[in-house]
Length: 229
Image 1 (cartoon, helix red, strand yellow):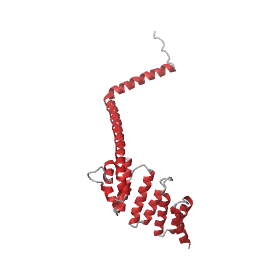
Image 2 (cartoon, one colour):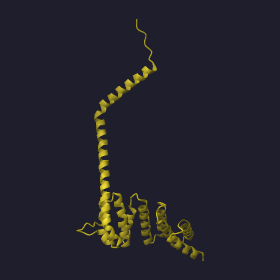
Image 3 (tube, one colour):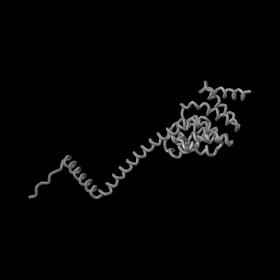
C-alpha cells in the first residue's frame, strides 16, 4: 500500500523554493560564467579608467594653477599679446597653451576667460567670442564673466539687444557676484540703444533698489533723471 503523500507546510514550500532558486542561479552562472567574468572585468576597467582620469584632472588643475600664477603679472600689466603667447625659453607659458593643454580642468577653463579677455582687449572680437562662448567651468563668477564677455562682443559689433539679454543672464547666475549691478547697468544701456526705454528704466530702478551703494546705482540715477526731463 502506498504511503499517504505528506502535505507540505508553508515552511517546506519556502525552503523548496529557495533550493530551486539556488540551483537556478547556480545553473545560470555555470552557463554564462564567461560573459559574467567579462562583465566584471569591464566594470573593473571602467573603475580604473575613472580613477586615472580623476587623478589626471587633479594634476592638470594643479599644473594650470602654477602656470596661471606665473603669467598673471604679464596679463595684469596689459601686455595681452605676451600673455597669450607667453615667453619662449622661460617658464612663462602663455594663456593659449595653458588652455590647449589643461582645458579640461577647472583652472584651464578659468584661463580660457583670461584668454578671451586678452583677445577682446586686442580687438580680436571673433576669437574672444569663441572662447567666451565655449567656457564650461563650474565657477559661477566665471560663468557670469563668460556671459558678460560674450555680451561685450555682441555690443562691439552692434548687436545691442542680444548684448542686453546676455548681460541680464550674467547678472542672474548668482546673487553673490559683486559685478551684478554693473551687468544690469550695461544691459539697460544697451536697451536704450534699441529704444527699449521702458525696459531700461525698470533695470535702472532695480539697480537703485537692490544695489543702492554701488557705483552703478549712481549712473542709473543719472539716466533716470535724464529720462524724466
